[in-house]
Length: 97
Image (cartoon, rainbow, N blue to C red; front, side):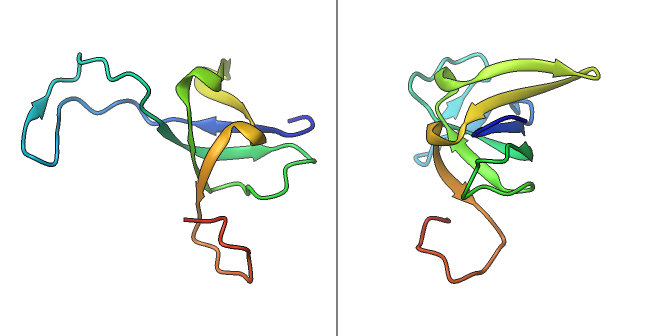
């Protein structure tokens, strides 16, 4: 990866889901402006806050899709990532969920 780019793998969308109130939402329903999660598999040398293995929250409109060795991956800019979920515990600034 170059510069501030992040390579991530998004798990396939899993069928139907339920809302908090119990309403069944079919897999074919389009939800506009919904952020998505993906797992980071590689980062560029200028990425400061994201590490391989982290999960990142991003807007699906701010991504580039690429196929590498038969696998589907996403390329994101670090600035397009809205949140990072990580198992790391450090003396950070609260940037992690």
